[in-house]
Image (tube, rainbow, N blue to C red; front, side, top):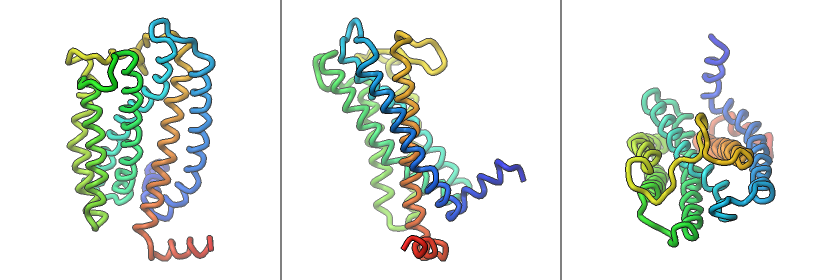
Length: 249
């Protein structure tokens, strides 16, 4: 068996995942904090004020990474849910449901920072702009997944039902992404691109990429921590969990 394939098979084992998550969770959190600390410092003290928006544009360094993560996490949740539904892999059910709280938090941060940024730019805290409205719907989808998962006692049945909602809801992501193109929108168009040309001064980009990397690493830590806790709850009573508890007593 190919080493990569064998590693994925091993990762699906609850005891192996426990050891993997216990090892990498604190590392992901630490690296994420360091990257975000560098990004925040650069955003506040290194990057010059924008020539049009002044210092208010600095909220971009939280708003943009959070907005990207709000959609990326939902897509990842749907992928895990689809794998779980097709191949009945329990770990993928756990990972899919562990994505939802972190994704909802990123979406809430996106909406809050967008409103704070919108007040000086648009003169209002909220407008039923296509981008804002679709992002709000995304938050409701996250809350729906979380609520459905917690409403059913059978954990595997709950994960399948909530996962199906995530798979259906993924159709909203391209609508969010292209909303500023398809409709007349107050929200500014795309100014930052991962692969194309960004319409920002190059001096403003390093702190932003640091924040992007930091939020990804922080999410990995959160995902592993939540999945680890759910994995232990589901496996409670198994011999390996009992031995683990005894070794830490």
